[in-house]
Each structure stands twice: as structure tokens, then as C-alpha cells.
Amino acid sequence: MSEKKMSSSRKHHLKSLMLSIAKGILEQEVKDREVERERYMAETCQPLSLPSGIQALQELCRELHHKIDVIDEERYDLQMKVNKSAKEIEDLNIKVIDLKGKFKKPTLRKVRMSADAMLQALLGSKHKVSLDLRANLKQVKKEVKEEDKELRDVGDWRKNVEDKAGMDGRKKMFETEA
Image (cartoon, rainbow, N blue to C red; front, side, top):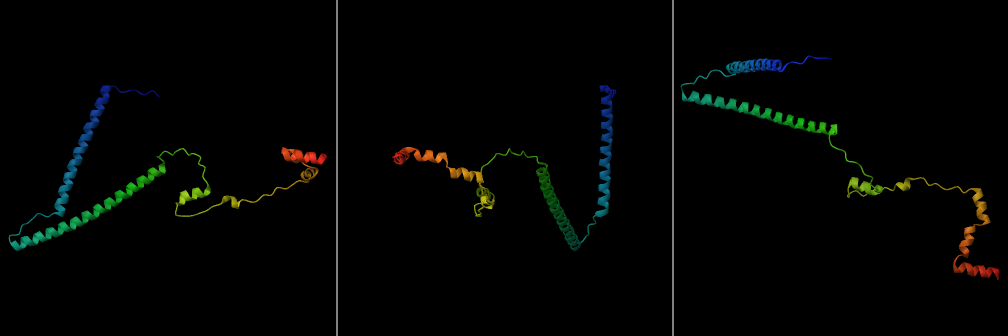
């Protein structure tokens, strides 16, 4: 894929064109915002006509204070909604980070610990739980083969050696010979 590379002067020319177009778009957006603001102000705020009497001025002040109170309540409600939404977003971001597993998992080491100690570590020292895993194991009895029984009946040479070992064994040996 052979692509022609642009010369640096061409790049600078295109960059300046893009910047000038972007500048024109930004200026148009500012003008549009100003026109929109003027239109909104004309709709919502009628031109102020000051009454000539004191009673009328006091009534106008009460009306303006009431409008200010209503707007402050709306602003406060909206601010609380924004704060609540921001807190929810923060909590969800924390959950996302946790689910991504950004944290390093430590290398696990082999720990020799009894089941009782493990339960105590998990449940805390308040809970007294005893778990004897060996009690749940099946008892296995060895079957003695018939051949082994015959050999035991004949006699075990180790038994004779143990009997003759030590002073008691020699004493018995002399007594049996005499």
C-alpha cells in the first residue's frame, strides 16, 4: 500500500483551513446562543413597568419575591437531583473498576490451618463453632488374610529376638537350657 505523503507546506495549509473553518463555526454558535438568550428573555420576562404608587410598588416587590422563592426551590430540587445522580455515577464507576479487576491479585501462599481456626478467622471470635472433619470420615477396618494368620501362629522370629534381648532374655535362655 503505497500512499503519497503530503508535503509539510500542504499540511500547514490544510491545518490553517481547518482552523479557520472551526473558528467560523464557533463564532456562529456564539451568535446563535446570544439570539436564543434574547428570545428566551423576551418570552419569559416582560418589560418592567414601574407603577407610580407606593402600594403598587410593594405589591410588585411581593410578587417578585414570590417568583424568586419558587425559582430557588426549583434550583435546589434540581441541584439535589444532580448531586444524587453524581453519587450514583461515582458508585457505578467504582463497581465497574472492581469488576474489571484492575487491582493486582496477590500471590497466594499455602497456609496450614485447621478447620476450626479457619472458621474462627472467618466468623470471628464471637461464634464458637467446632468442626471435626475427621469424625465424618468412614472407619475402614483392615481385613486380615488367612495366610498372615498362619504365619503368626507359626511364630514370629522378631518375638524370639525381643525376648532374648537384654538381661531378662539371657536369664530366660539360661533357665530354659538348664
